[in-house]
View 1 (cartoon, helix red, strand yellow):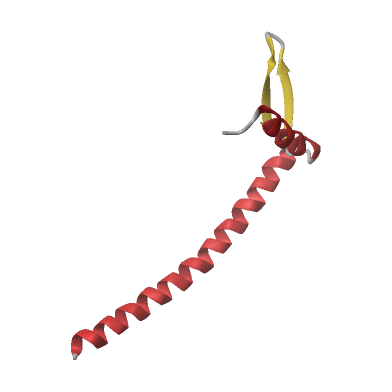
View 2 (view 1 turned 180 degrees about the vertical axis):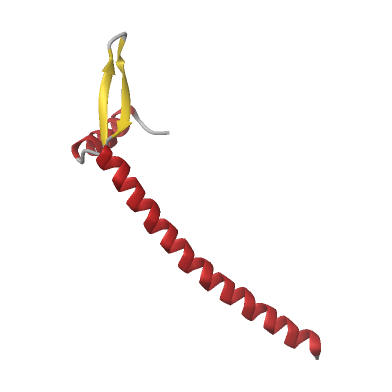
Amino acid sequence: MLQVNTVSELVDGLVRRNWVSRRTVQEDRRVSVLELTPAGKEFLATLAQAQIAHLQVRRAKLIAVVASLGFAMDEILSD
C-alpha cells in the first residue's frame, strides 16, 4: 500500500513534467482531481508505441523459439 506522502510526491513529479494537471475540489479540499495534459497524452502515446515495438520483437523471438521446439519434437518423435 502506498503512503499519502508517496502518492503526493509522485503526482508532484507528474505535474512538474506537465504530464498531469491537478485541481482541488472546493467541496472537500482534501480531494484532488488529476487530468492528463496534452503533453501527458503525447508522452503516454509515445510510451505505448515503444511498448508495442518491444512486444513485437519479443513476439518474433518467441515464435522462433516455439518453431525450433516443434522441429526438435519432430526429430525426437521420428526416431
